[in-house]
Length: 198
Image 1 (tube, rainbow, N blue to C red):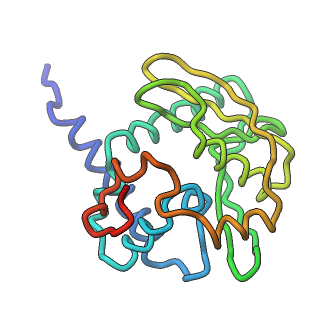
Image 2: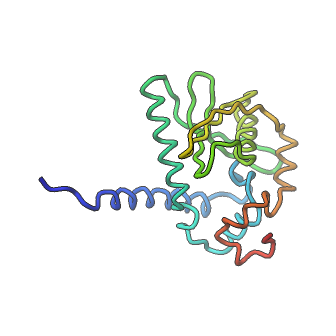
Image 3: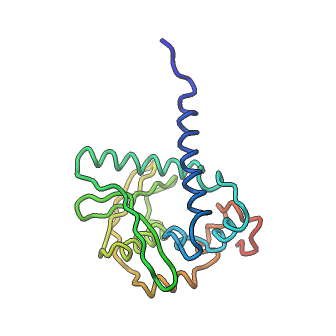
């Protein structure tokens, strides 16, 4: 019996190819007034440099933790579907001021929106994950949603309440930091080109 050695590498190349394409479309083809929820919970300067500087897509799309996060999210959605009626992720846009904010949760069971995250370290509640869910609550018009965090050390469920109204989100757009969080520069792929590094 022959074994298909290299199947994993072939699979990973296919997954990376899809991630590269999605990232390129997201970065190059979008209108200047479109912001993704994930843009709002991270450094403003990073996305500006990506757009201006012809970023190496692999630095964003195929980082191992990003790929593992995709595998975890897809796996959770598949397992949920074996036991519950699941609606898959659904993208939504909302006009706020002169901006269009777009986002999508990972899955929905009944009325519960669920965002799935992978953490390489622990299952603690990360402020940027919480903020992402708080903004999703506004986009989808819900009072709360579920955030599920998975890591090699376990898993945990959080209930995240709505926090932001449209004026709060407009304030975030206009005043978000560069960096937004102290730890961002450590992991940023364009920090050499940035004058804001801390």
